[in-house]
Length: 268
Image 1 (cartoon, rainbow, N blue to C red):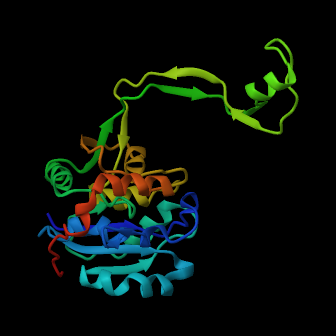
Image 2 (image 1 turned 180 degrees about the horizontal axis):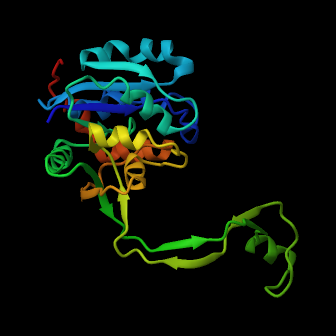
């Protein structure tokens, strides 16, 4: 196996809020680099391709270029609207001779060597491999319509002498809710993670399709070809940082030792 690692990093991270999500400190290193470093010790990873925001590519290179260069990374322009555009652009930079492509979220800094090893080992047997964890929570389907109701303050009701069967005055506090319309059977449901690994020919065919709209991960496009995708065991620790709250949780999982647990790096 000779693998090229693609890191889609062109998203605006609107759900994260203020600040550069990928530049957040994670154990003494930017979150982006922590998501890449575990791959750099592997002899079968020949290239690292980071697809950054095209409208801000020079600034992205200024922030991360030297550090990514130390890890053997190449920065290319990603897409402007959708994730699939970013990956498609990065595929054009995969070097000749690579047999596989691994695609990993830029904001999964807790990926570990054991998980990567499981996925890569399975990729020597199957053309498309993804890590996942089985859904354990009860799943409900909510109505698309949001209903708002006025909140009642029991203390105010008591002061005003309003009984339970009487209407409270409008206190200006609204609660938004959705009605449950059904329970989803969670049997055989899995939550997908990355890295997702594919043979070069298969992932290029997947991204050569005319209709790429709505794809939320790379395996989805392979499925559209009618090709099988295999699931291997992921990890509950392999959290994707989407919101500021996710970052707090990820840091807690990593623990205080993360700043001193710096892996050895390999130059390509």
